[in-house]
Amino acid sequence: MNIKYLFPVLFLGLGVLSSCNSESDIHADLEESRYNVEDSQSDPVQHERHILFTKYKTYLITNPQTVDYKFNFQKKNNLLIKAPEQTPALLQRGIQRLHEMFLDVYPEEFKQKHLPFSIIIADDIQFLGMEDRTPSYHAYAANRFLAIGSVRPTMGTESDSLKRAIKGEIHSRYWIDYLGNETKVFTVPEAFLNVSKDYYKKEISELSQSPLGDVSGQLPWQIDFHKLGFISYNHQTTFFDPDPDWGGWWIEAPDEDTDKRQWIAFIFSTPKKERTEIISSNELLQKKYDLLRAAFLACDNFDIDQLP
Image (cartoon, rainbow, N blue to C red; front, side, top):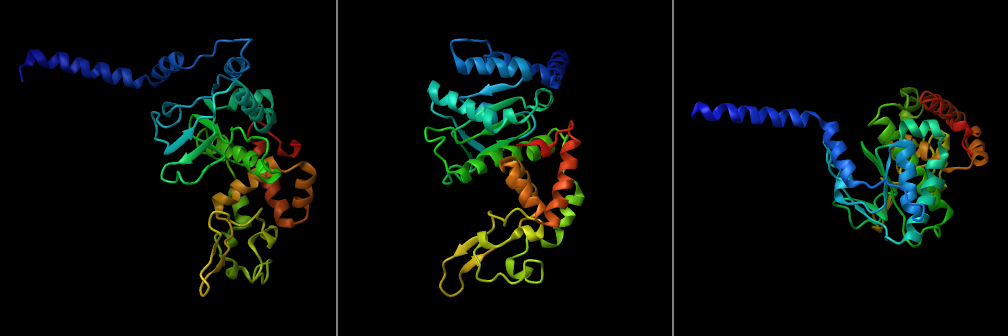
């Protein structure tokens, strides 16, 4: 290679490396050009975008595109997020749900410190390869965003149990996947897991010598998993096999991750009076709640005991 061509190539390569090292500058350029946060008093949705960015430096995304959630500098999110219908009335209802189920739960100082780069309002959130399930998730959190699904024309007509499930998943994903796995400001202590560790992932027949006793013949939702310190059975791994000879219910206790998620969902989605009655009814439940409360307090003194 002719040496007179070598130095320009080297300098060009160094320039590229230098520019790629300034990830925050790249983000700033992309964000400034992509997201409009100018205020508009005549447009309630745009006004909300302006408020969220002004107060918390968080972008509100109401018409998500692939670039908003799938790719970033750290990893690829294997998701397909469907945007809600872009009618002003529906988007305003979606923003109202965002406040009622998520934003209004937290004090201002907490939100100023701990909201993600963006909040995405979605119709549904699907895991690629499982698009036949609608939706795959009620909510999803990654390293730079929190997505909230179920913003569709039928919103508000859900059963109370489904509304609780949606709210619970929003907060469990926020605390475990975002504040826990990404920003590292929240940790569920090992002592919490130790309370029920002997029962994790056990099939119901393996638990006959546990405080559950013999529950053969009972349906999953009829079994009192509170006796083991669990909120419920593992909904992901429990199923019914219709085979007339070998079929029947396979009922499984939660694993560690499911246990944490069920507890956090329960805490945020269950009214305080009902929550207190359930927790105080069992020594193991009370012990796990106390351990979780201490873990939440360690994150900027957020007190789950004050949730309504």
